[in-house]
Image 1 (cartoon, rainbow, N blue to C red):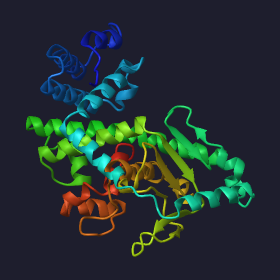
Image 2: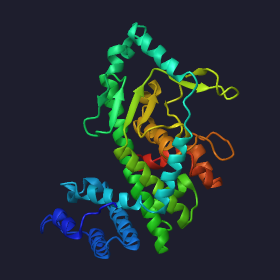
Image 3: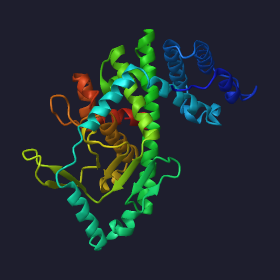
Image 4: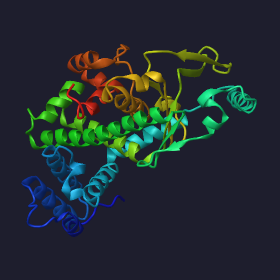
Length: 355
């Protein structure tokens, strides 16, 4: 059972003296947390607490840089709320879906031969440059995020990659709180013209309370995955896809090199095994002049494929990339927009950049 800190601990850790009075929004969080603590975790008071925190977040530029978070109390409270919400019915359904996706994973024919062949080439020195034996053996851990690693990046590239990850993670946190704010507005019958409702509509279209509740749950799952699951960024000059011919599933694997214009690639949720995630990134990943729409957007986009099973195509099979395509899809086909990776990516990045 997820544990949320007690009201007494919250008040003690966030008290900053007479010179730092508590705002109206923060006092509503206090009241909601006290009610939740008294009710011993009643689902209704949990939703009220989540809504109060979402409203408080809307009053701040960055909730996690608040003076109340000096010792991490705000982060701990939000993590506890998200973990508790993840235990509801939608969370269990998502977990069942993930288990089913993992169960469908079949190792390609000839996979072990490919691994042995690659190991021999490595031992024979056939792989040179930064992907030589020493380069491949070195995996750099992120100094701040212990679950994140980088493979194949030069020192200069590593700086950009780390910044891309950090921006994507900030966007993920803001996306979670933004979705909860929309959910709160629908639940209370208000919030029709709030900035967060407008933001949601721009990227995902019109929605009812049930749809937004599902989307908020997915945003929470994204943030939790980015907080906890092992993630490795693998830098390659070009992205090579290895796949089995659909007409001969027992035949040899085939390679397809993806050149300029493709920023990154992951196996889809249906081809995922284990609890770690590897994102293959080519030169375009770090080459975009905008750090938000380049590396950060790519990180969030690719991870939605892994965590949420999103697609790059609408339900009608139309490939959807870019601001124009995403906003048009949200207006005409909200159901598709809710499952398109770029719509999710632009929603998260819109908290960092006015797009």
